[in-house]
Amino acid sequence: MHAAKRIAQKLAPNTFAALHNLKVRHRLSSTSRLLRSVIPADDRLGLTELKMLNTAYPPKEDEYPETRDSGYYHPRTVAARAAERAAQIIDRMPLKRGEVLEVGCGDGTVGAALQSHQIGYTGIDLSDTEFNLYATVTEAGVRLIKMNVHNMDFEDEKFDLVFSYDSFEHFEEPSKAFEEIIRVTKPDGHILLSFGPLFMSPWGLHVGYSIGVPYCQFLFNQETLMSYVDNEKLRPIGYYCNGWRVSQYRSLFTDQRVHCLSYNESKDFSHIPLIKKYAPIFRNHTDNAKDLLEDLITDHITAVFKRKRQSSS
Image (cartoon, rainbow, N blue to C red; front, side):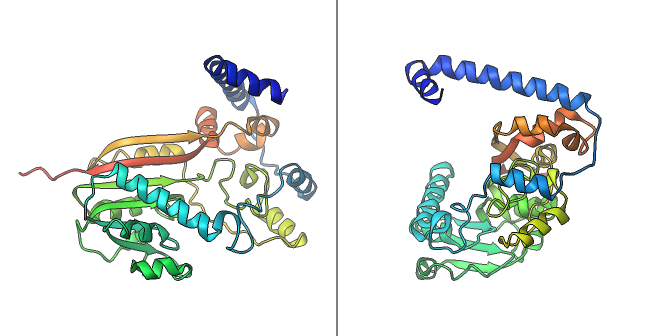
Protein backbone atom coordinates (compact mmCIF):
# COMPACT_ATOMS: atom_id res chain seq x y z
CA MET A 1 0.00 0.00 0.00
CA HIS A 2 2.77 2.44 0.92
CA ALA A 3 4.64 1.69 -2.32
CA ALA A 4 1.47 2.28 -4.33
CA LYS A 5 0.92 5.61 -2.59
CA ARG A 6 4.48 6.71 -3.36
CA ILE A 7 4.08 5.78 -7.03
CA ALA A 8 0.75 7.62 -7.27
CA GLN A 9 2.22 10.66 -5.59
CA LYS A 10 5.14 10.67 -8.02
CA LEU A 11 3.12 10.12 -11.21
CA ALA A 12 0.19 12.39 -10.41
CA PRO A 13 1.19 14.76 -7.60
CA ASN A 14 -1.68 17.23 -8.12
CA THR A 15 -4.32 14.52 -8.16
CA PHE A 16 -2.76 12.83 -5.15
CA ALA A 17 -2.69 16.11 -3.22
CA ALA A 18 -6.32 16.84 -4.08
CA LEU A 19 -7.44 13.38 -2.92
CA HIS A 20 -5.38 13.71 0.23
CA ASN A 21 -6.92 17.11 1.02
CA LEU A 22 -10.39 15.71 0.40
CA LYS A 23 -9.69 12.84 2.78
CA VAL A 24 -8.38 15.21 5.45
CA ARG A 25 -11.44 17.48 5.13
CA HIS A 26 -13.73 14.47 5.49
CA ARG A 27 -11.87 13.29 8.61
CA LEU A 28 -12.02 16.76 10.13
CA SER A 29 -15.72 17.09 9.38
CA SER A 30 -16.59 13.71 10.89
CA THR A 31 -14.42 14.38 13.95
CA SER A 32 -16.04 17.76 14.49
CA ARG A 33 -19.51 16.17 14.34
CA LEU A 34 -18.43 13.52 16.81
CA LEU A 35 -17.04 16.06 19.27
CA ARG A 36 -20.29 18.02 19.10
CA SER A 37 -22.38 14.96 19.84
CA VAL A 38 -20.48 13.16 22.60
CA ILE A 39 -21.09 13.65 26.31
CA PRO A 40 -17.99 15.12 28.03
CA ALA A 41 -16.18 12.77 30.42
CA ASP A 42 -13.43 13.64 32.88
CA ASP A 43 -12.40 10.00 33.30
CA ARG A 44 -8.74 9.96 32.31
CA LEU A 45 -6.91 6.82 31.26
CA GLY A 46 -4.85 4.85 33.76
CA LEU A 47 -1.39 3.30 34.02
CA THR A 48 -2.34 0.18 32.05
CA GLU A 49 -3.49 2.26 29.08
CA LEU A 50 -0.42 4.48 29.35
CA LYS A 51 1.92 1.48 29.17
CA MET A 52 0.04 0.14 26.17
CA LEU A 53 -0.04 3.45 24.31
CA ASN A 54 3.57 4.33 25.09
CA THR A 55 4.52 1.06 23.39
CA ALA A 56 2.39 1.93 20.38
CA TYR A 57 3.85 5.47 20.36
CA PRO A 58 7.44 5.06 21.58
CA PRO A 59 9.26 8.11 22.98
CA LYS A 60 11.37 10.17 20.58
CA GLU A 61 14.74 9.57 22.19
CA ASP A 62 16.60 10.56 19.01
CA GLU A 63 15.09 14.05 19.24
CA TYR A 64 15.51 14.34 23.00
CA PRO A 65 18.82 12.60 23.79
CA GLU A 66 20.11 12.13 27.32
CA THR A 67 23.22 14.11 26.44
CA ARG A 68 23.84 17.01 24.09
CA ASP A 69 26.38 15.25 21.88
CA SER A 70 23.96 13.51 19.52
CA GLY A 71 20.65 13.91 17.71
CA TYR A 72 18.79 17.20 17.99
CA TYR A 73 21.47 18.74 20.22
CA HIS A 74 24.58 17.59 18.38
CA PRO A 75 26.87 20.65 17.99
CA ARG A 76 26.81 20.35 14.20
CA THR A 77 23.01 20.13 14.22
CA VAL A 78 22.76 23.10 16.57
CA ALA A 79 25.12 25.17 14.42
CA ALA A 80 23.22 24.30 11.23
CA ARG A 81 19.87 25.16 12.82
CA ALA A 82 21.25 28.46 14.12
CA ALA A 83 22.68 29.34 10.69
CA GLU A 84 19.34 28.51 9.05
CA ARG A 85 17.41 30.72 11.47
CA ALA A 86 19.91 33.56 11.08
CA ALA A 87 19.58 33.28 7.29
CA GLN A 88 15.78 33.44 7.60
CA ILE A 89 16.07 36.59 9.66
CA ILE A 90 18.52 38.21 7.25
CA ASP A 91 16.35 37.24 4.29
CA ARG A 92 13.00 38.35 5.75
CA MET A 93 13.99 41.40 7.78
CA PRO A 94 15.23 44.73 6.35
CA LEU A 95 18.39 44.72 8.47
CA LYS A 96 21.84 46.01 7.71
CA ARG A 97 23.76 46.68 10.90
CA GLY A 98 20.82 47.05 13.27
CA GLU A 99 20.43 46.00 16.89
CA VAL A 100 18.45 42.81 17.44
CA LEU A 101 17.08 41.11 20.55
CA GLU A 102 16.26 37.43 20.93
CA VAL A 103 13.92 36.51 23.77
CA GLY A 104 14.20 32.95 25.01
CA CYS A 105 17.66 32.68 23.46
CA GLY A 106 18.67 29.38 25.10
CA ASP A 107 22.29 28.71 24.18
CA GLY A 108 22.66 31.84 22.03
CA THR A 109 23.82 30.05 18.89
CA VAL A 110 21.49 32.08 16.65
CA GLY A 111 23.21 35.19 18.01
CA ALA A 112 26.61 33.79 17.10
CA ALA A 113 25.40 33.21 13.54
CA LEU A 114 24.01 36.75 13.31
CA GLN A 115 27.24 38.25 14.61
CA SER A 116 28.95 36.91 11.51
CA HIS A 117 26.64 39.24 9.53
CA GLN A 118 27.82 42.20 11.62
CA ILE A 119 24.48 42.61 13.32
CA GLY A 120 24.52 43.66 16.97
CA TYR A 121 22.87 40.89 18.96
CA THR A 122 21.53 40.65 22.51
CA GLY A 123 19.91 37.50 23.83
CA ILE A 124 17.91 37.07 27.02
CA ASP A 125 16.61 33.99 28.77
CA LEU A 126 15.00 33.26 32.11
CA SER A 127 17.76 30.73 32.77
CA ASP A 128 21.47 31.15 32.09
CA THR A 129 22.38 27.46 32.39
CA GLU A 130 22.99 27.11 28.64
CA PHE A 131 24.83 30.37 28.04
CA ASN A 132 28.29 28.77 27.95
CA LEU A 133 27.25 25.50 26.32
CA TYR A 134 29.04 26.10 23.03
CA ALA A 135 32.45 27.73 22.72
CA THR A 136 31.51 29.25 19.35
CA VAL A 137 28.99 31.50 21.09
CA THR A 138 31.56 32.87 23.52
CA GLU A 139 34.10 33.29 20.75
CA ALA A 140 31.58 35.29 18.71
CA GLY A 141 31.25 37.77 21.56
CA VAL A 142 27.47 37.65 21.79
CA ARG A 143 25.74 39.44 24.65
CA LEU A 144 23.63 37.04 26.72
CA ILE A 145 21.69 38.27 29.75
CA LYS A 146 19.61 36.43 32.33
CA MET A 147 16.34 38.38 32.21
CA ASN A 148 12.58 37.83 32.37
CA VAL A 149 10.75 38.75 29.16
CA HIS A 150 7.77 39.91 31.21
CA ASN A 151 9.80 42.75 32.71
CA MET A 152 12.76 43.59 30.50
CA ASP A 153 15.41 46.00 31.70
CA PHE A 154 15.77 47.83 28.39
CA GLU A 155 14.78 51.35 27.45
CA ASP A 156 11.81 51.93 25.15
CA GLU A 157 12.27 51.59 21.38
CA LYS A 158 15.80 50.16 21.57
CA PHE A 159 15.84 47.33 18.99
CA ASP A 160 15.36 47.21 15.23
CA LEU A 161 14.20 43.61 15.50
CA VAL A 162 12.96 41.44 18.34
CA PHE A 163 12.64 37.74 17.54
CA SER A 164 11.95 34.47 19.29
CA TYR A 165 12.04 30.83 18.22
CA ASP A 166 10.19 28.06 20.09
CA SER A 167 9.84 30.03 23.31
CA PHE A 168 6.62 32.04 23.20
CA GLU A 169 4.49 29.00 24.10
CA HIS A 170 6.48 28.70 27.34
CA PHE A 171 5.99 32.28 28.58
CA GLU A 172 3.70 32.33 31.60
CA GLU A 173 2.00 35.58 30.56
CA PRO A 174 2.02 35.91 26.76
CA SER A 175 0.07 39.20 26.87
CA LYS A 176 2.66 40.79 29.14
CA ALA A 177 5.51 39.35 27.10
CA PHE A 178 4.09 40.75 23.86
CA GLU A 179 3.53 44.09 25.56
CA GLU A 180 7.20 44.24 26.53
CA ILE A 181 8.36 43.07 23.12
CA ILE A 182 6.42 45.86 21.45
CA ARG A 183 7.73 48.39 23.97
CA VAL A 184 11.41 47.71 23.24
CA THR A 185 10.93 47.61 19.44
CA LYS A 186 11.64 50.80 17.49
CA PRO A 187 8.90 52.41 15.40
CA ASP A 188 9.06 50.72 11.98
CA GLY A 189 11.04 47.95 13.68
CA HIS A 190 10.05 44.31 13.28
CA ILE A 191 8.99 41.43 15.49
CA LEU A 192 9.36 37.79 14.45
CA LEU A 193 7.75 35.05 16.53
CA SER A 194 7.94 31.38 15.58
CA PHE A 195 6.85 28.91 18.23
CA GLY A 196 5.38 25.51 18.98
CA PRO A 197 4.27 22.88 19.62
CA LEU A 198 1.32 24.66 21.23
CA PHE A 199 -0.01 23.16 24.45
CA MET A 200 -3.18 21.66 23.01
CA SER A 201 -1.47 20.11 19.97
CA PRO A 202 -0.28 16.45 19.89
CA TRP A 203 3.12 17.15 21.48
CA GLY A 204 2.03 20.14 23.55
CA LEU A 205 3.38 18.84 26.84
CA HIS A 206 6.96 18.78 25.42
CA VAL A 207 7.77 15.44 27.07
CA GLY A 208 8.37 13.30 23.97
CA TYR A 209 11.66 12.07 25.41
CA SER A 210 9.74 9.97 27.99
CA ILE A 211 6.09 9.87 26.87
CA GLY A 212 5.53 9.36 23.14
CA VAL A 213 1.74 9.32 23.35
CA PRO A 214 0.11 12.21 21.44
CA TYR A 215 -2.17 14.38 23.59
CA CYS A 216 -0.94 12.73 26.79
CA GLN A 217 -1.71 16.04 28.57
CA PHE A 218 -5.42 15.29 28.07
CA LEU A 219 -5.58 11.51 28.16
CA PHE A 220 -3.81 11.14 31.51
CA ASN A 221 -3.69 13.18 34.69
CA GLN A 222 -0.43 14.50 36.07
CA GLU A 223 -0.19 11.85 38.80
CA THR A 224 -0.47 9.00 36.29
CA LEU A 225 2.23 10.46 34.05
CA MET A 226 4.57 11.12 36.96
CA SER A 227 3.99 7.65 38.39
CA TYR A 228 4.67 5.97 35.07
CA VAL A 229 7.89 7.89 34.46
CA ASP A 230 9.07 7.12 38.01
CA ASN A 231 8.20 3.41 37.82
CA GLU A 232 9.84 2.98 34.42
CA LYS A 233 12.86 5.05 35.48
CA LEU A 234 12.46 7.41 32.53
CA ARG A 235 13.68 10.99 32.36
CA PRO A 236 11.61 13.23 34.69
CA ILE A 237 9.00 15.34 32.96
CA GLY A 238 8.10 18.96 33.51
CA TYR A 239 5.13 21.12 32.61
CA TYR A 240 6.50 23.89 30.45
CA CYS A 241 3.66 25.28 28.34
CA ASN A 242 1.37 28.19 29.21
CA GLY A 243 -1.78 26.40 28.02
CA TRP A 244 -2.97 29.15 25.67
CA ARG A 245 -5.44 28.29 22.92
CA VAL A 246 -5.03 29.30 19.28
CA SER A 247 -7.90 31.79 19.58
CA GLN A 248 -6.07 33.57 22.41
CA TYR A 249 -2.93 34.02 20.29
CA ARG A 250 -4.99 35.22 17.35
CA SER A 251 -6.65 37.83 19.54
CA LEU A 252 -3.35 38.92 21.09
CA PHE A 253 -1.76 39.45 17.68
CA THR A 254 -4.41 41.97 16.62
CA ASP A 255 -2.73 44.56 18.86
CA GLN A 256 -3.27 47.98 17.27
CA ARG A 257 0.31 49.12 17.89
CA VAL A 258 1.63 46.72 15.26
CA HIS A 259 0.92 45.78 11.66
CA CYS A 260 0.77 42.02 11.17
CA LEU A 261 2.79 41.48 7.98
CA SER A 262 2.39 37.71 7.86
CA TYR A 263 0.76 35.03 9.95
CA ASN A 264 0.86 31.27 9.50
CA GLU A 265 -0.44 28.33 11.50
CA SER A 266 0.84 24.83 10.78
CA LYS A 267 -1.48 21.88 11.31
CA ASP A 268 -0.92 18.29 12.40
CA PHE A 269 -3.69 15.92 11.27
CA SER A 270 -1.75 12.76 12.12
CA HIS A 271 -3.60 11.78 15.26
CA ILE A 272 -7.25 12.44 14.48
CA PRO A 273 -8.04 8.72 15.06
CA LEU A 274 -6.86 9.13 18.65
CA ILE A 275 -9.12 12.17 19.09
CA LYS A 276 -12.08 10.18 17.78
CA LYS A 277 -11.32 7.15 19.94
CA TYR A 278 -11.24 9.21 23.14
CA ALA A 279 -13.64 11.96 22.08
CA PRO A 280 -15.46 12.24 25.45
CA ILE A 281 -12.17 13.00 27.24
CA PHE A 282 -11.22 15.68 24.71
CA ARG A 283 -14.73 17.12 24.71
CA ASN A 284 -14.44 17.77 28.43
CA HIS A 285 -11.95 20.56 27.73
CA THR A 286 -14.26 22.98 25.95
CA ASP A 287 -17.87 23.99 25.38
CA ASN A 288 -17.18 24.61 21.71
CA ALA A 289 -16.37 21.48 19.70
CA LYS A 290 -15.33 23.43 16.59
CA ASP A 291 -12.80 25.52 18.50
CA LEU A 292 -11.54 22.43 20.29
CA LEU A 293 -10.68 20.63 17.07
CA GLU A 294 -8.89 23.75 15.80
CA ASP A 295 -6.85 23.82 19.01
CA LEU A 296 -5.99 20.13 18.80
CA ILE A 297 -4.62 20.22 15.25
CA THR A 298 -2.77 23.58 15.29
CA ASP A 299 0.76 22.96 16.45
CA HIS A 300 2.90 25.92 15.39
CA ILE A 301 2.55 29.66 14.75
CA THR A 302 4.87 31.95 12.81
CA ALA A 303 4.08 35.67 12.72
CA VAL A 304 5.89 38.80 11.58
CA PHE A 305 4.91 42.28 12.77
CA LYS A 306 6.00 45.85 12.14
CA ARG A 307 5.62 48.35 14.91
CA LYS A 308 3.58 51.36 13.91
CA ARG A 309 4.78 54.92 14.27
CA GLN A 310 2.78 56.97 16.73
CA SER A 311 0.51 59.43 14.99
CA SER A 312 1.28 63.05 15.78
CA SER A 313 -1.50 64.82 17.66
